[in-house]
Image (cartoon, rainbow, N blue to C red; front, side, top):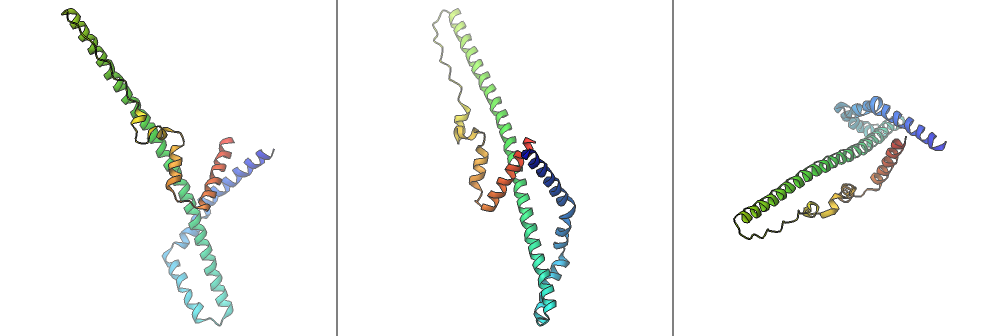
Length: 196
């Protein structure tokens, strides 16, 4: 029962967040990034200095500046978090495509090597047949084994492990506790979506 209520709450929060991202949050972003609003906000520092003795005006302007400051920092943090999550999704997709391409190229290379080995074996059989017909003794060459393509990769077998790209991603990114917490929350949210 509790799992069902959590998934219901999670779905409701996801739909609410999607609604906010689509219809509400773009307006403050448009307002706060409008050049005239930026200039007016900076210009509000002048009345703070000139009318320092008028407490109500100073408090009003100061409150506006504080709200704008919090709004801007919250929006920047939100979009940075969303951007990082999106970049991670893009990196995962690119890694998946690269892995699929690599698998395809590897299989093609194996087929080509197998074809060359078959041709080499047929040539050896033809040489044996020609030497038998001409009455000469022929000792066939031992065929070279096919190389292990995973061993040829600079990183070896480790490159082909399932979560190898995630480990490299974690190593290359600087550690940030806030980002780590948000990433963990995104993973649990994704798991809840998958289990639903």
